[in-house]
Image 1 (cartoon, helix red, strand yellow):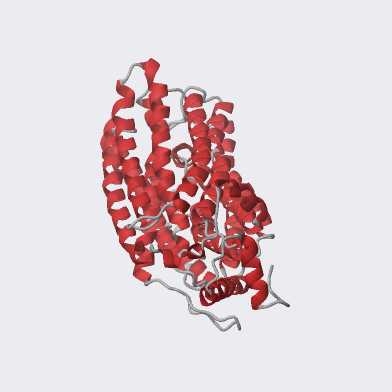
Image 2 (spheres, rainbow, N blue to C red; image 1 turned 90 degrees about the vertical axis):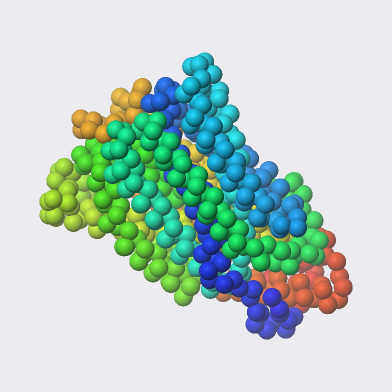
Length: 510
C-alpha cells in the first residue's frame, strides 16, 4: 500500500479472487467439524450411554472452556513468526488436532468402562477445542493480510456463504436422507462414515486455504507490525474496553451465533421436522429447495455490502430474517403443521417454504459478513493504537461470542427436560403434545427472533462504515510511510498518535 501525508488516494493491497475463495475454505474445514459435532449428543447418549442433562452440561462447559482458550491462542498467533508465515503453520496444526481428536473420541469412548467414559469424553473434547480454536482464529485474523480494500473484503462472505450453504444443507440432506436410512438411525456405523468424510474433506479444504493465503502471509502485510509497536498479554483488557466497534460486533454476532446454534442443533431439527411436521426426511428436501434462494440472497447481500458497506448489509439482512421468522411463528400457530408437505402444496406449505427460505437466507447472511467485519475492527485498532493484533481481536471476539453461544446446548437440553425429556432427547416420530408443539416453535424460531433483536440494537452503535474505513486505511498507510521515510521506529501507541497529529495537526482523527 502506498499513500501520502497529503491524503491522496491509497493503493490497497488486494488479493486475486480465487485466493479469497480458497482461503474461505479454512472456515469450511472447521464448520465441517462443527456440523458433525452437532450429532455428538446422539453418540454420547445413544452409544456411550451418558444422560441428556449431563451431555448438555458438558457441551456448555466445554464451550466456555473454548472461549477461555481463545485469548491465549490469539496471543500465540500474534507472536508467531516463522519462515512459513504467521497463519499457515497454525492452520495445518489445528486441522491435524481436529482430525485426531474426532477419531479418538468416536472410536474409544463407548469401549471404556462407564466410570471412565465421562472423564475421557471431556478430555478428548478439550483437545478438539484447542485444534478448533487454532484454525478458526486464523480465519478471522488472516483477513487483515488477505486484502484491505473495503470493496473487496465482502467477497469473502460470498464464498463463505456459498460453502456453508452447501455444507449445512447438503450435509443435512446426506444425514437425513441417506445415512439415517442406511444405518437405521444414529448408530455407530453412521458416525464412522460421517466422520470419515469430514476428516478427508477437512484436510483437502485446509490445504487449499493454505495455498490461498500463501503469498500474503508475510510481515509486510501485518499492519504496522514492522514498526515494532509492542503488545503484551495485559493489553487484552484495554483493547476490549476501548474498542467500541469490537464490543458492538461481539454483541451482534454472538446473538446471531446463539440463534444459528439453536436453530441448527440436531435435536431442534428432529423436533421441527421429525415431530412437529411429522417427516424428518423433509428437513433434507426443504434444505435442498432453499439452496438456490439462499445463494441468491448471499450474492445480493454481498453486492449490497460492496455498493454501500458491510454494516448496512448486516442490518438489512437481519431485519428481513427477523420479520420472516416472526411471520412464520404466526403461520405455525394458525395452521395444522402436519398439512405442510410437498405432497400438499397449499397455503400452509407455500407460506412455510417462502418464510423459511427468507429467514434462513437473510438471517444466516450476517454470520458470513462478520468475518470481514472483524478485519475492519482489527484495522481500526491498528489505526487507533498502532498495534497489529488480529489474533487478539479475533479471539477476544470469539471469547465472548462463545461464552454467549455456549448457551445453545444447555438451552436445548434444559428446554426439552422442562417438558419431560430428562433421560433422552425427543426422537423421530415422538407423539406431538401441546408442550412439545410450543417448545419446538420457541426453539426453532422464537430464539432466532430474540437474538436478531439484540443484534440490531448493537449495530446502532457500530460506526465502521465505508467512509470511516477509507479514512482508517489512508491514515495507517500515511503513518507507516511517514515513519519509514523519516527512519522513525514507532514502539508505542503514543507515537502513533503524534505521527497522526503531525500529518494533519488540525483535523487529525482521534
